[in-house]
Length: 120
Image 1 (cartoon, rainbow, N blue to C red):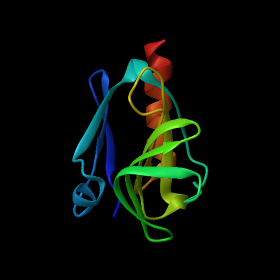
Image 2: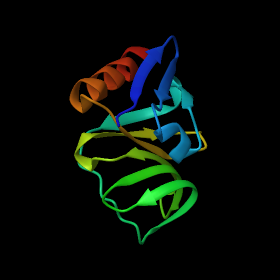
Image 3: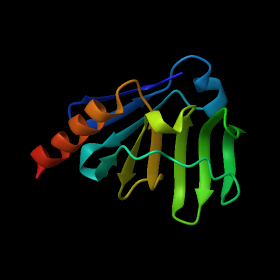
Image 4: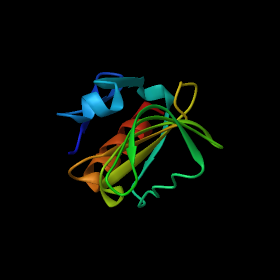
């Protein structure tokens, strides 16, 4: 199940839908746009061996929802299909990166990156 990412004023809001709210132990995440570095659309790896699940659900190849500690820092995943995810890199936030599955990753990443550019 895909979530939604939307821009509301100066904030980027990640909204989880359906059972993902339960699996991720979270309903939404709000991040100030000034803390968003970039949004990319490359396919994400499941990589279950180099990450420690802090809270959430993981069934490799099926679902990865919640907070994970990695060598790059704390990350949040909402992922069922790695090829449908947007990877949003953050600065000065709890999460270093949010990996989030959406219906149209290309247009979502474009909208986020345009919002970042317009703030500069």
